[in-house]
Length: 260
Image (spheres, rainbow, N blue to C red):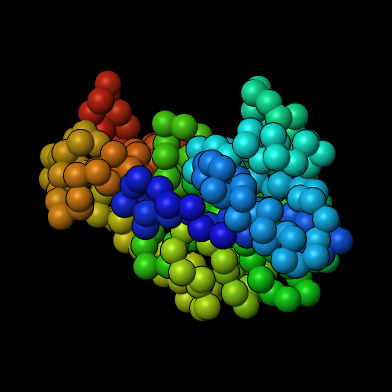
C-alpha cells in the first residue's frame, strides 16, 4: 500500500506493507488519512481477514508513524509496536525489546535493530522466505540520508548495513521506491559509497573547506535545492564519525584535520 508524499527525497511516496493471515499486520503507519484507512479496510475484507491486529513501525519519522492516530481510531484493538523511545502521544505503544521474533500475518519476523538512519530503526526479516522489510535502510536507485541532528549516526548505519548483509536476504522491500531484488549488491555499493564519501570529506577539509555548508556546496553542487538539507545532515554525520575516529577536530562551526 502506497501513500503519496509532498517531497522528492523519498521518491514522492511511502510504502506500508499489509501481511494477511492469523495476525493481520501493517508494517509502518504513513499519514494517508481516511482514504488510506478505507483502502486498508477493503484489502482486509477482500482477503477474508479479521480487523487489523497489529502495526509495527520501523522508526518514528513522520512518514512512517504519522498515520497511527487514524489507524487507532479505525481499529481500536490494534497493538502498536516500535522500538524505544516510545512516543508520548496516543495511541499506547508496546516496545520492541532486543531482537525478538514477532508473529505478523502468518509469518515469523525477526525484529532487527538497525540504527543509523534513526536511533530506533528496525528491519523485519522473514527467515523462512528471505524477505527483509527494510524501512529506510535502503532505497532503490538512491542513497539514504543520515540525519545527524535527530539521532542518526554514520558508524551505526555502516554497522547495520553489514549486519543485514550477513543475513543474505533474497528480497528487500523498502519503504520508498521499488523492491530491491539484489540486496547484497546494493548494500555493498552503499558501503563503498560511504567510504568514498568519507575520503572526499577529508580531501575537502585539506583544501580548506572547513564547514558543513561549504562541504555540501562542493560535494552536492548538482543536488536539487529541496534535498540540500538532507545532504547537510549526512555530511555532518560524516564529520562526527571522523571526529570520533580522532582524524579531525572542530572549533565552533569549523572543522580541521587533526594535527599529528
